[in-house]
Length: 83
Image (cartoon, rainbow, N blue to C red; front, side, top):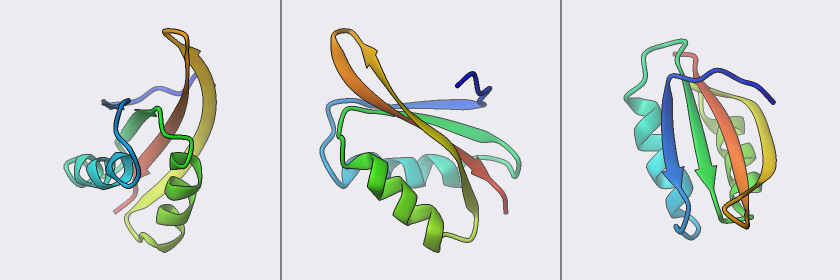
């Protein structure tokens, strides 16, 4: 996925629920329409982010992907601030 973004949050090394907790703080600092890219090493973050955007009223999940980075699997999330 070649998604442009406005801010990057690297949550590698953080365990559940910290990637989501910190990403929520980062998303709160975005302007409406801006996109946050989150890189996490916690596989559970895939489901965590999906669940969060279902109940949040101010963000949208644009996409998720799994990549290999520095020899480890990472989970990429693109979050758009909508309100």
